[in-house]
Length: 352
Image 1 (tube, helix red, strand yellow):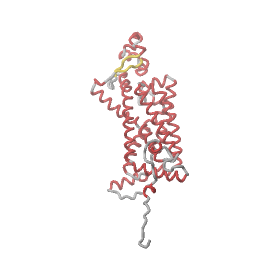
Image 2 (tube, helix red, strand yellow):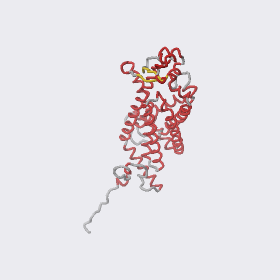
Image 3 (cartoon, rainbow, N blue to C red):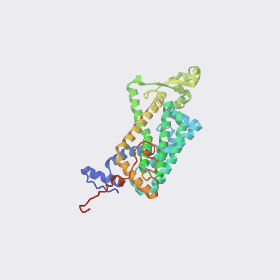
Image 4 (cartoon, rainbow, N blue to C red):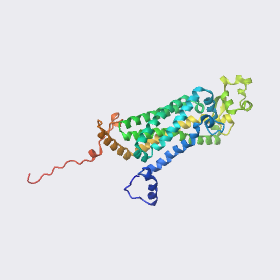
């Protein structure tokens, strides 16, 4: 449990400290941000653990899992089957482990668990990235915007996790913290994505002129409808008798969340990539703002890095990892005692 020397400003702060100090938090704003963001991730993952039953729940008949248009590919094509199993089977456990990695008391008191969990998370994420790439071209329609979002998310999170790993092996704790926070803030954009999609659906419902068309293959639509008669009624070009009107088996479908089954699937496809890119930009900007607003924590951890690197005999302690001054024009970093050490004062006596 953390001991705080500063007196509580009021009764509320005093009571709040009783809740977050046992978790290892010394500052209330850190505990609040952890509760909001880590709590959101925890809830999101718990709600989706049922998706590990891919064919019973995720692509089951309940309609509470993947979009039906996605399941057409997940159930009929081997590459997509393997891809979604790899992705869901690894990213959900990885995210669940990651939630507890950000609890200070676990990092300080269960160091061995923290290290082992870190290696497990890194391995699981790398496997999940492979699965995500395998299904990207059919995920929510798989248009180029969606594929770009998936690619950017895979690249940025992988680079961030690798840099975090390199820095922790060099005992550069401040940079390990920064890159881990970046990685999981990027991952969390998948949650904000859902909120942006919900807003987009409302906008399209209120302003029909904002709705757009997209192309869907008739085979996919037939899987979604499950009823050929109903499909041919909504999209006559999908009827084999009218095959000449479905170019390469594709028909134009209006994206409308309040429309028919095909329209609902199309609006999900049209909005996913846009929502993903916007959410990623918001999260990427947000984490950089947070890191800039918490320089004292970064400096404290750099001092810890210095002490640990000095103890282990690293060259250039305090800067043995991947720090800014190695690549840019930042001023060389000096440990705290060097910065605050007073200059010697020479006192001249009258007798000298």
